[in-house]
Image (cartoon, rainbow, N blue to C red; front, side):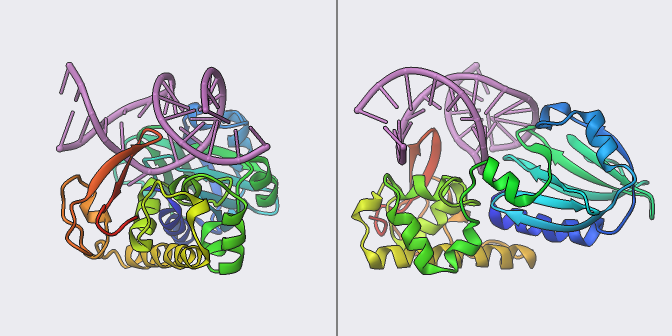
Length: 263
DNA sequence: TTCCATGTTCCGCA
DNA sequence: TTGCGGAACATGGA
C-alpha cells in the first residue's frame, strides 16, 4: 500500500483524526519498529504532548510534537493508520498505539509485516539529509527542468532510478510500473538512451500518475480501468493496446509491463 | 508446500 | 563511484 500517494492520504487521515489532542498514553509499542529510540524514551517523548501539524517527504510522514521535533513514521509494505474508539476492537498487528484523552479514542500504526519504522527527529530537513533522501517526487515532477536535470546526473535503468529513494523520494514498485506504462518506456530502458522529449514525458507521466492516484484514492474510487494497476498479472490484456502483460524480475521484484507499447 | 507481496538495507560484483 | 542482483528481515495470502 504505502508509496507516496498512500502516505499523502495517511497524512490527511492523521490531520483529520489526531491533531491538537493531548496524548495521554502510549499503550503499545513494538520495539522492532523503533529506530534510534527505545520504547520507554518514545513514551516519555510523546506523553503529555500533542501533534500540531504533519509533513510528508517521499514515503515518510512526520508529525510535529508541539514545538519540539517530530515523530517519524514509515509504513514499510503493509503499514497504515487506523483511528478507532475505545469500544471498538483494536486492529491486529498494532505497532504503535497512541491514546488521546479528549474523546477517548486511539490512533494505531498498524504493520502486519513489521517492515515499517518509527523514529523521532529534530527536524524534517535533518532526517531527510541523514537518510540521504532525494527530493520529494511530487514536488520534483511538478518542476520539469529539475526533474530532467536530476535524471541527467544518473545512469542505469529508468525503473531503477524511479525507485531509488536517493534520486527521487516516494516512488516504489507499483507506481514506477504505472509511470513507465503511461510513458511507454520499458522498465529496463537505460537512462542514457532517453532524449529530452522522453525525459519530459517521464516527468509529465510521473506527475499524472501521482496526482491522479492521490485524487482517486481520496475519493475512494477504484483504480481507473485504463491503468495497469488492476491488471498486474502475467497474460492479462493491456488496457491501452491489448498486448499481453508480461512480468519480469528486476532486483527480486516483479515488474509488470506491456511489451507491445513499452520500449 | 511454494511463490509472491506496495519497503529498506547490506553485501558482492561489474 | 554508481548501479545491479540477491538475500535478509517478518508475515500472510493465494
